[in-house]
Length: 117
Image: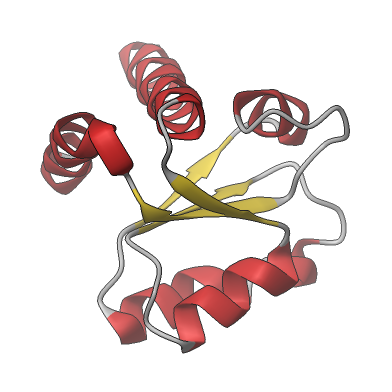
């Protein structure tokens, strides 16, 4: 149960950082295809994908490609919440932060927290 509370905390922090980056002149790519391209071009700083995607094969390659490229990758619970966090009205399967803009410190804090998990 404590693990579930920790996961919700991480999810909410990820959503918060995404909202801040979007609002403060950061650069975000939305959608599995765009995230894959950003990873292949070594532009992504963080990859976030939703674990409720069906079928799972749609996003299965993202953690592997992220690991190959040395980019942190995190799964969140909800496509709907992920879409809301990046300012779109439709559910979003994956997003990548390319440039955190003014919120670099918030991104670095999140990356530090993810390393400890």
